[in-house]
Image (tube, rainbow, N blue to C red; front, side, top):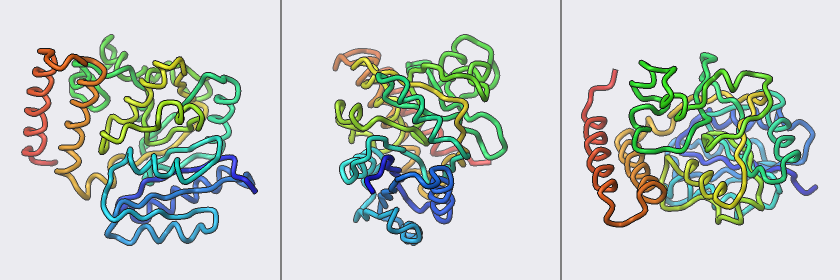
Length: 289
């Protein structure tokens, strides 16, 4: 049976979370035709073997080194053929009905390229996965920024992270600038049109870049709060804290230089590089709680 949906999970030392993620997809899809492609980025914890428990529905592509998230997802896309592609982190799990709601959003709107669920933290709080295009102030008012926590009702905070009031459970889908790559359902034809993820992004910000390039082609990105996923943030990145921090800031600069300050000698580029370098140094050297 030809699969209607391909789930792509990039695994790096995800441990038993990978089993929970795959089982949640199996439970949600039920008897539907689907497949899973697990791209293992040279894990050292043996977690890639978990995918074998779901064979033949799931298969593993093992990389000899960690090639990053964007490149690995593109590998999964190339190795599959379903019209719908579920991109999901292994530390994420679906609630029942999630994929049906996301697929319905794509089916009803031919120019919708990506639909994303309401993503919750394990404690039930909203994670803030629907966002406005990043700019220079995102570092101050982004999802985890201090000023957003202090001034959650400010216009800048509400622009960078879409207000929970607009994303309540049961509400109809809403158009947004970009969605977290922790869990999204994409239309294969749209991804093919833009060449998938930009492999220059090792990890972080590749989802914002993808959504922006799709929107430039006239596609839409929609948040669907009636579908739900639970995401335990940063499990894999905690096993490699320093490289993850460096990758975050390198990708933030790449995004800014590509979309916000594209001119090579723009003074805004120099300012962004200086600020991001300082933030990276501070984050690397602070004492974790």
